[in-house]
Amino acid sequence: MAGSIGLRLYTLAQRRDPAAETDRPARPPGRLVWLHAGGSTAGLLELARRLTDEEGLTVLLTGVSESGPADSGVILQPAPPDTPADARAFLDHWRPDVALWSDGELRPVLLHTAADRGLTLLMADARLPRLLRDRDGWYPGLLRSTLGLFSQIFALDPASAQAFRRAGALPSAVTYAGRMEERSAVLPCLEAERQALAQMLASRPRWLAAVLPEDEVDSIITAHRTAMGLAHRLLLIVMPERPEAAESLAQRLEGDGWSVALRSAEQEPEPETEIYVVDHPSELGLWYRLAPITFLGGSLAGPGAIRNPMEPASLGSAILHGPRPGAHGSALGRLGAARAARAVASPGDLAEALGDLLSPDRAARLAQAAWTVVSEGVEVTEAVLARIRRELEGRG
Image (cartoon, rainbow, N blue to C red; front, side, top):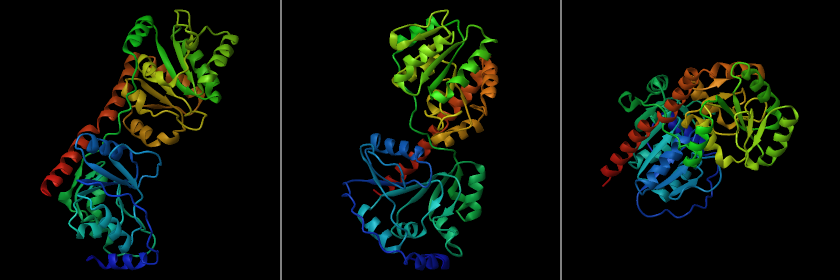
């Protein structure tokens, strides 16, 4: 394995680690594409699905921390330790036809070993180049020599593209592309029911509090009461976090003087209904479509946003959320950067933001920006797929 002085020093340092004994499943026959996740996996998971469903390829996916069943045709495996023996054993077993890494994490020994075997290396969703063990020692020239192995790097943004070029990637190999598309978050609904409810609620402004923890109920009700001062016919559709809590929530709200309808009791939102309590998560696609504004439950005082914000974004509902993103920090960050979601810091801010979005034009602008974020990755994924196809065709 040729390379820089830094690579030789790095390789010697890694020999202090014992070689791993790994029980790997058999390699399936046919072409195999190796995807490695160095950060967020959402774009890679959608790419893997398309490679298996549309191209009929087997996908080996490494670097994924989540456990659970993979899609058909996708093999989840840990990445090998970055030592010569482990890299050789991994590549001897899987014999990938092309490799695509994401984010910018670099495992120099593994990548140099792969390149020495003639494997084409690509990178997508490239954010910032970094060595797996960049703080363990001084490895002169290692970052540059490793980045030079990649035939093409699809950078997230212009700043990322510049960072890769400065770190040593071939300038001609780096292109600003953007982020790959994530798996569709569009939830289904019964169209006949949507049409009937849309007709029933046609003249009423409305908003949805989606999957609401008990600790956030008071804040939502306060915001609703304040907003009704601006739009007296405003309807709140509220789905509690626990479906079994819907009936007791409806009773509590009625006891507080609200006009309430309960969907599980087959009640409909009449003209005088102020709060409609719904209970089944399988119907979220219906409520996202009907509500021009959605508050993400759990993001204000709960454990963090419970539902993926791309769900309402993909269905044209403007998004309100609190300061706690939970597991959806990356998605909310993208939406926020595109001015496609409205963040609030407190219950008082929520009431103000809700009142502002009761203007149909403002809610529509937010929803349109969110839809742009949802759909922007399609072209990037198509470009990545085209490059993978070209590499596979070149191998005969």
